[in-house]
Every structure is written in C-alpha cells, then in structure tokens.
Image (cartoon, rainbow, N blue to C red):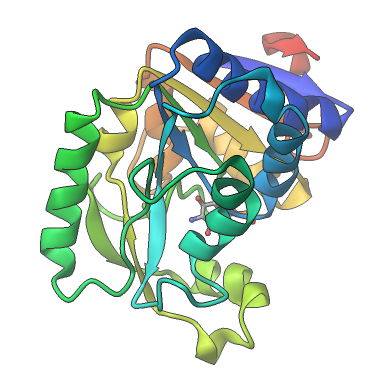
Length: 247
Ligand code: GLP
C-alpha cells in the first residue's frame, strides 16, 4: 500500500481527479468506481473543470453504495448527489452510470444484479474511496466478518450521527444502505482512498498500523496489490510521513 501526504488538500483533490481523468483518457470505456460524501465534492468539481480533456462518450461509472430505503430522485439520495455533481454536467446517461437503487422492491436481487452488471462491464478499473470515522469503506460497517458481496447493511450509530447533517435530522435518515461488499471493492484493479480532516486521523492510523480486521473494514486494503491512501495533514497527523511520499 502506497501512502501520499500533503499539507495542501487541493493538491490531493486534484491528484484523485486527475487519476480518474487519465484512466478514461487511456481506456475510454473504463469502468470508474465512484464514491460520495463531502470528501469527493471538490474532486468532482475539479473533474468538471477539466472535463474537456477526455471524451466521456464511452465512459462508464459505478457507485459504491446507496441508502436503503430512499427515494432514488429524492434530495439526499447518492443517486441525486452524483447526478447533480457529475452525471448531468458530463452528459452521462442512466446506462453509463450504475447506482444501486435505494427503492428496489427486492434489495437482495438488486445487489445480485449489481454484481453481475459490474462483471459484465469488465470489472472496475479504478475505485475511489473515502473512509468513515469508524473505518468503514462504502457502507461496510465494522463487524465480526468481512461481507464479500454487495449487500444490505444496517448503519451504525457513528455513521448515522455523521451523516445526519445531510438530512433534516437523524430521525429523518434511512437506517440502512446497500453497499458493494469487500470483495467487490478488492477486485478493482486500482484503488485510491482519500482521507481529509482531523476526524479521520484515528481510522487512518488504524488502517496503516493496526491489525487487518473486519472491525476496521478499511484495513483489508493493506493486502490490495495496487492501493494508494492519500491524506492531508490532519488525517495523516498520527502517521510517520517518512513512510510515504509528499505531494
Ligand atoms: C459515507 C459513504 C462513504 C464515505 C464516508 C465518508 O457515508 N458511505 O463512502 O467515504 O461516509 O464521508 P465524508 O467524505 O462526508 O466524510
């Protein structure tokens, strides 16, 4: 696992955006694995600024997760987040941009179909990830065992508290989600995890220095052959910067 540190958060946003842009430039029909959350808003902003560098006509994207249950077109769904910030401005159609359906009548079937679609699209070329304060990736919450495949999960109290800011309040939030599983994520040919802010420092420290354990789902990334963790000075505050490179 490669580590990249920077005192300049904008450089990290640009780095991640540029890697996604380069992936499409090199392989126009590459399947990009995308994430949501506050961390990725500036990344998508940078992609829009640079959008003319690549041809998006063949590009395909898949998102990590979606709340469940949630209205697909409602204001807080991850589908709406992506549509507003990336899909509509880039002109990506529904066929090009796969997002789990938070109002699927049969969530189990939805998860199985999702896995099949990813495989049929040739697998994920580059997956970007944020990290939860509790070490979750996608919505793979701390638990006793890694869940390999896309599945329904109940959200933990930490995640409900952290994400309540996007809703009218914690009691207005869905209590569950559909998420790519750990194997689904680990099958991506390249992974970039971006961590920004002091609240992520402990999770990032455990990811780099702790045990590989389902209690900190991101720790599995240590065994991925092509994974880079990028941190700003706050998220990387507990780490020895000489272990990585500085941007
Ligand atoms: C969200 C998503 C994750 C994201 C994380 C951190 O709920 N499920 O994919 O990485 O929590 O979000 P933020 O970037 O807002 O801190």
